[in-house]
Length: 437
Image 1 (cartoon, one colour):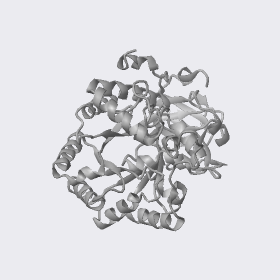
Image 2 (cartoon, helix red, strand yellow):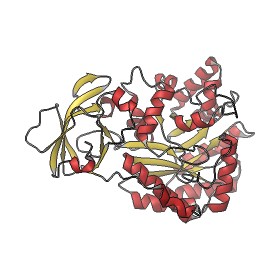
Image 3 (spheres, helix red, strand yellow):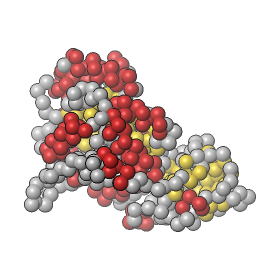
Image 4 (cartoon, helix red, strand yellow):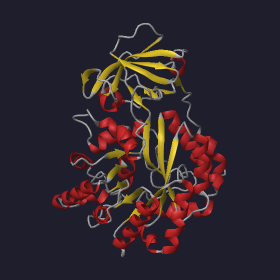
């Protein structure tokens, strides 16, 4: 497999033999169970689609690419990113590495530098990276401060059109929750989201008028058929309880769309009984939860000269036990909110397993970057391995979970419609012209 994309058979019909698949990603086929939530199978690829799933080693009449028990995954779903902020670190660092420093640095860079061309160039770099790593669907939040920032939405629309069919894009309008108290702002947000086919969003915290603002948000979403995606309680303060208010608002307004809540960091700082009550409400309201483990590990509980005392993440395992649909995602990439990252879902998954203890057992863990986010984003056609679907797959040498999680898997092969893509990553020098280098 070290030969990369040259190793796949040059044929319209071939078999990926002796593949190991995460069972939670496979629909309509029961391969041989090899433990840890993994199954063994042959995958027949024809004319760019998955023609059949067969018992491992049973297909002999076709050109063969033998995985030798290596894993095969569907392409990934990265459901919470910030493509408009991505890769500004070289231009605007966060000297303190904390949340307040990130806010100030991004505000300054946005006001000084975010033209449509600037945002579009950085989005392009991010998408080239995500595509090379094997991601097929991304949702990005778009800053709307003031409520319709004029540069970023056109850049998003251009990127969505240019990348359609390779990396599909969704966008969320990101504004402070108190802006929903202003009727003029609500109208501009509604028009923006409707114009660009987006999702209504914002970030919530314990601000005066929170309940009223949430009622306006849910009314706007109901009246216009918008889904909702919110940044919630991204703080260590146990008194931050807007997650509870969101769940109560969803129930109170009888909202029928999809509500997604991200971060929810303060939940892990609250008394067990209070957190339990909130999670019960979240389950009752049908909210979906996305955790951003790398970014929250980076930002939360950061104090100069002091070792952090907690991991910054929410109670994902307890939520899943209640039947709440959960996922993990990249969040920020090389910007003041997170100085690192490359929109690599394998890295996100690997770090999520470690930070959130998604292991022991690992049987169902693969769903957090595949089937779960796909369902939350209303794209059940993505993030799974199923006969009749495009052969959009990621091939690994790793056979077991221990092998998979112990290395970056930089030698993976990415197939799109059955053909291996060139996985060359963009050079950071491609961004130099944006930063005066």
